[in-house]
Image (cartoon, rainbow, N blue to C red; front, side, top):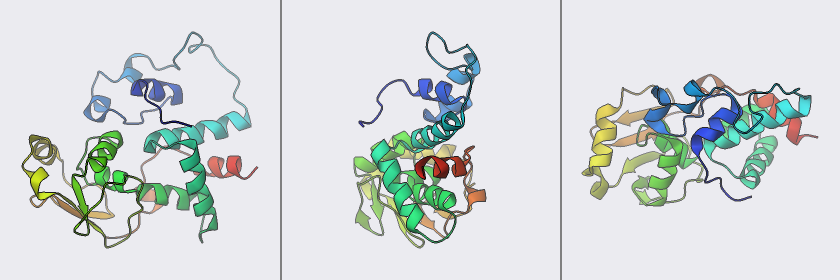
Length: 207
């Protein structure tokens, strides 16, 4: 399945919750979900009977859209999480949180995950001192992510750092002046502020 390239706000309306795909716009009155809080399409306002499968599917789609994943990527991460020790659903979310593009977003070096993915692809970051341009790369505790020296002087990153309201993610430590961040511990479920019921995803893929 190819990556979705349509209107981002349409995805939020379909899932009935903010996915924060448009950065600052999602926090403003311009958010489409504030204006039209119903599913897109001709029958978006009509009530539909929700089945058990439908609930499981929606949770899976919600997580996919939060992190910008294709279906094959989502399945790959689930299979990997299922083989790890611990609770499969929490393992899945932890893996997704440790993706390089998501860590860049969590550190405040991008206003959205989509923007973080683009910035990583364009080679604006160093991972442990080396160029890293693969958004799906899984990071580890102790890894350091830094904006490249040439990119630090850009208006884009200066604005991001000026508007950054402190470090609100407990599992990363960020030095705003140096535009550098370090993963200090693995994110726990309590640290992941996603309104999803991951056990439904496990049930869906376990059928």
